[in-house]
Each structure stands twice: as C-alpha cells, then as structure tokens.
Image (tube, rainbow, N blue to C red; front, side, top):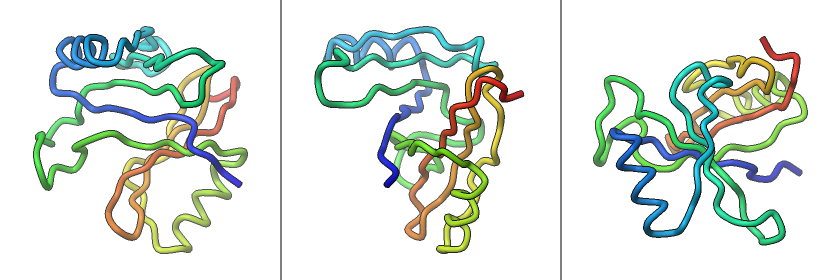
Length: 132
C-alpha cells in the first residue's frame, strides 16, 4: 500500500511563503536547490518522533497564477513509489494523466506529477541515488 510521504507548496514569493509558514507553524526550511536544480526548500514540520510528513516549497510554475482555476494553486501531495514506471502505468490505466513528466532529482530520486480523474495534481517519488 502506498502512503503519502511528502507535500509541496507552490509560491509566487519563496521568501514570503517561508516566512508565513515559519511564523504560523514554526516550520523550518532546508535548501535542497542543488538536488532540484532550481530554488527548492525542504520543509521540516516537526520531529521524526511525531506523526506527520515533511514537504517542500518551490516557485509556482511560470504561466500559472494564484487563485481558483490556476494549474498549481495549493499544496501537492506526493506518494512514495518503489517502481515509478509501474506506478505511472497504473495511474494512466486508471484514467490519470501526466501533468509533468518523470525527471531525475540527480543523486536523489525520480519525480513526476500526475492529474487524477478529478483534475487534482499529485506527485510520485521513487528514491534512487543513481537518478541522473
């Protein structure tokens, strides 16, 4: 059974977004830009001893705007995968669509984004230190 392992928050202004979540929830941030190849901040939401998941914060994709109907307007849930390609095939067979194709997070993982049958975006993440 696959479980949510990560979430993402897309922002127009990364500094403003980080400040908001730090002030409101006390979250801390780690710079993962070297892995992502673009500004990307890991979100630490609490201790590993407490229930919950950590996430990431990145710039909202170009061409989208905040507000209802925007292509990425909110947090994106990411599901852990042991086999990205097999899970992607099941997603497509069940009526899902590719939102952003599979891409390497060099030295870390494979990541891609899909649309469910309701138009919701979700991520798929397969750890792989050999991803290139």
